[in-house]
Length: 218
Ligand SMILES: C[S@@+](CC[C@H](N)C(=O)[O-])C[C@H]1O[C@@H](n2cnc3c(N)ncnc32)[C@H](O)[C@@H]1O
Image (cartoon, rainbow, N blue to C red; front, side, top):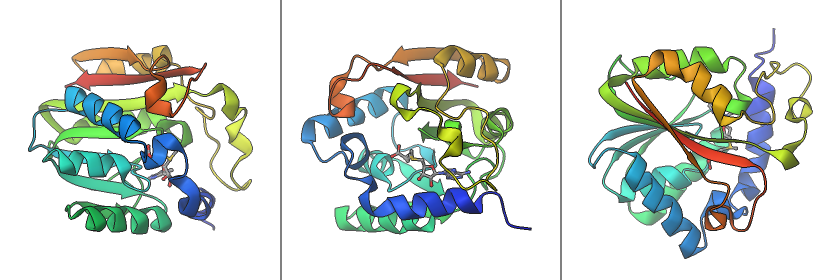
């Protein structure tokens, strides 16, 4: 039987070459890059922390974290994304560990990370509540979970973007902050949502849909 994750990996492999052309992906504009760096600095523990970047893509946020002095592990389903992430870090003279794998169930010992970060991943997971439950087990007591997510108006129905044999995606198109908070709150002790829709610099221009960061502690 075909692995239902294979069409998802194939889709992102095909997107990897041009992924960084989007302003919020490649962070090529110094102002956009600085805006993301400032938020990461505020959301994450002081460096050096052991941080897992879930669905790291081409490693743009991993690179900012490594530059801030964190020990970063990035995991992504698409080998093409991981190749680019490794190249990006090497070109910057920085070190991080990148793995091809399923961020819904990443490797790691219980309590082994100080922080987990994911940006724009949960919408494409087949079982987001199971992933959230597993992620908190990977954090040490007092550890931090940062989820940068949204409900993308322009995305439309993203459930059809992968091949038909891919898993159905309960949060296709994104998840409102309230729903993500409801799913996570039984597993964490503190939870705060920062709206990000009004920060055009983060996105390379104005956006009109819901974007936010949810920061939780266990
Ligand atoms: C919209 S991109 C976001 C990439 C990166 N987090 C960023 O913000 O630039 C979604 C990423 O999630 C990855 N992905 C999708 N499903 C995944 C899974 N189950 N495990 C690991 N990575 C996954 C894709 O390969 C892709 O790189």
